[in-house]
Image 1: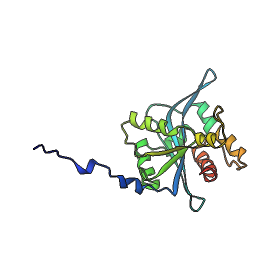
Image 2: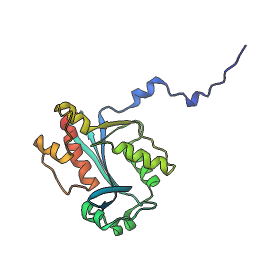
Image 3: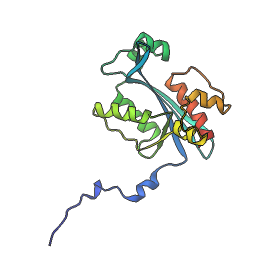
Image 4: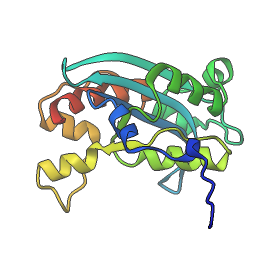
Amino acid sequence: MCQIKVNLATIKPDYEQDLMNYNRVVCFDLEMCCWNENGKGITGEIIEIGLAEIDLAKQEIVKRAQYYVKPDHDEVSKFCVELTGITPRTIEKQGRPLQAVMKSMVKNFGGANKIYASWGRDDLIFKEECLAKGIDFPFVEFVNLATLYRMQHRLKDKRIGHKAAQQALNIDWEGRQHSGYVDAYNLAKIALVML
């Protein structure tokens, strides 16, 4: 007779899907170190994460946060300051290591039990940087609102930016674009209409 030993702690039961909070979505936006090289935008490490959580049942934004991240290798360029408004001094004074920011995000917004949404594939950028730095990536469910918007509006061959999509839906844009905090808030506003 063959005995198979199984560590039950490593098996994720089907009911864990039921732990997902489907009434809440955390909209997030990343800002990264960036440079303009020969007219082409190049990005590096994450320097800001903006978040805005929505309650779909109540149809409202219930929580917001802004985290500055100290990059391990990159420096904030003059181009980046002009685009995002984030200065090297801001990062020096308010920035924290990505791992510490991730812990705060999970504590304040939830990890595997929450759905996260972005405009585009910020989830892949986020995950890639975490993996490269040896940081656990606790988020599992993502919604790409840009793809959803294109599907809802039959724009299969046309890309559309977040601000343009929001304006097309007659939703006022508030604040400075390319601030993670502001962009996440505006993303939450459009998500409330789309979801």
